[in-house]
Length: 433
Image 1 (spheres, rainbow, N blue to C red):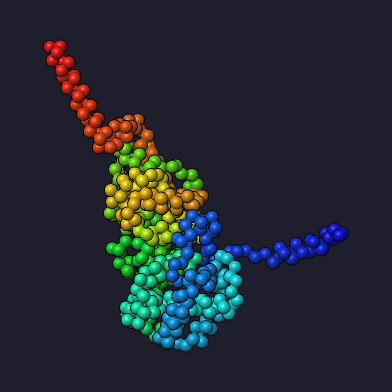
Image 2: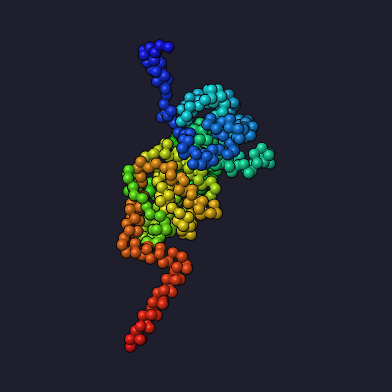
């Protein structure tokens, strides 16, 4: 066989290269989790009950919810003040923009994609309204109570999103006459989303709804989706990121490794719950007291943190404050003893039962985090703690605590040894006299 004509091969390569399209567009905000990160904890990124959007549509184990989604979609449209044709018209017009919000190529046809998005959006809106207005006995059959909480977590997964602007537009199309009239049955969509965000436990319960929502009520275009909104709620109440903070938006490429919690404690660092903060990110150091806001670690905490961090790593790497927080805890917790110390100090509220699971969770998330730059405030804290830990005096104290006082038995033996030494010295003095 004769060799191919170079010109023909060049033409084929040129055509192939021209067909190549970028995976990401300027609108992209919903990301498929990479294989390397997914394999560290498959379940943390995968919906358990309901699929939303195209990434998990058609997954076999989620098909049972498709009928429920369609029924809730139908109920929502019947309840609305407009008709199905109006919804379809808007989604048709927005389909290309919606498609551009996803990082991976969507294999669905335009028509199929439109149907999936419309059903999923109407299901979400009806689910939120049901959560707000109360569930009925018929709901207990169609959507049993034991499935509702897992759905809240499914709606926070980065792969399981629809654009927020689409939900907001459909909600306004559905109830144009009541949304701006103070009707309690149809509050602003942001109020309804609190039923989802509250399950993440990233925002303290003592913050009022109005305080949480006020930064976003007049500009929902800033919100990409539920995962993004959950992160924004969290950052809004961080004192580190307030305009008055000198460290706001200041970041550096290099940062030191911080010593573990037990080693810092042995050197004399005191760990205390920061009760003055409304955000778990607000780490503060006063003299040798390290104040850390309390965090509740439940069976779902890893899922929430992994998805928030992954979104941050994909979408806003230059503002990766959650990733910085995970790195800080990864440094603090090297072993089960470190986790036990933070649990005893009240910094970690452990709902997992085993402290080794807490250590494993923070360490496994930290392995996947990239930090091209880092929060300057955290860098200052790391350096001060390290300097305190390596001070000659504090270092000797740490050695004594580690070698002679790290267990009750060793402490008792050390005290007994000192007491015997004292008695020996006294006996020697009396014998000399």
